[in-house]
Image (cartoon, rainbow, N blue to C red):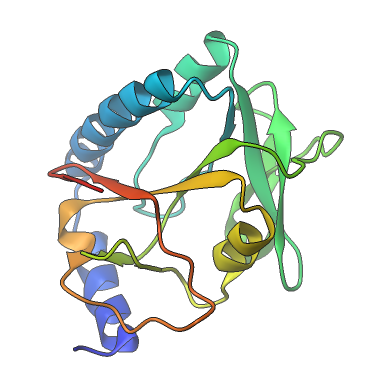
Length: 183
């Protein structure tokens, strides 16, 4: 088993080499699959992320979901945890902690209820485990909000055989990539 640090470095290097066209094509494939999953789930509340650097970009899907009446929530990072806030438009963001775009309006916080959480990550494994950037924000959130369904999203090369996981890591319900759907 490779160390997570080495996996992070390798994935970041591969991701840095992605062209805008590759990101768009892969993101669109992922968005199409996610849209089907969301429609079949009947869930109206979707916890999203704003793409950072060369992450999967789902902004087009988010626009569609808003137009269909879904409630979209985006994270705001605190010192140790994240909270999600409802957004009504996708141009109401500003750079926050870690240069991640966060909603400006913070009137409507997500409460513990059923929702799909679309989770970014640096790498995922065949057992639905995920590693992010190392702060554990999503793991802490998911442990507190157990009514939610976490779905990991990534490009196919971000899938590895096995990650070194700890007791605090929360596995995904499923992982959607541009090449395969992993349940």
